[in-house]
Image 1 (cartoon, rainbow, N blue to C red):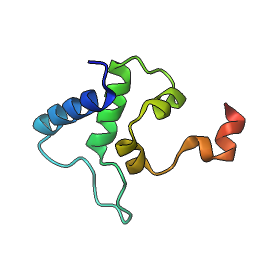
Image 2 (image 1 turned 30 degrees about the horizontal axis):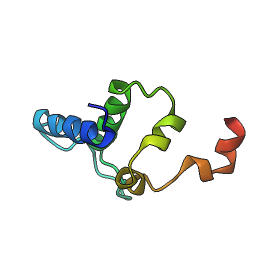
Image 3 (image 1 turned 90 degrees about the vertical axis):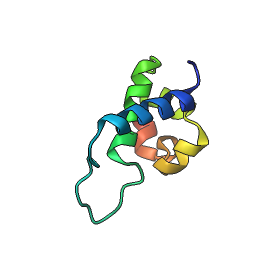
Image 4 (image 1 turned 90 degrees about the horizontal axis):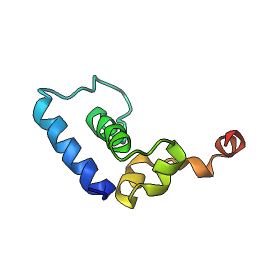
Length: 82
């Protein structure tokens, strides 16, 4: 399975099956990604052998990028560290 979106959705489906409750405790500001979605994205990156965040952000489909909202390549301090 080389499709990042398909892998992400499959891993998220499995995590939802084994998780009895929402992992997120109460927060004033609602995060754009739930805990399970973030864990699923991390596991997908590991599964696909994506080692760097920069590579991950390049490969993310638009549907996931819109949920994240903040693109690292637009951040000046991020560019200076790369």
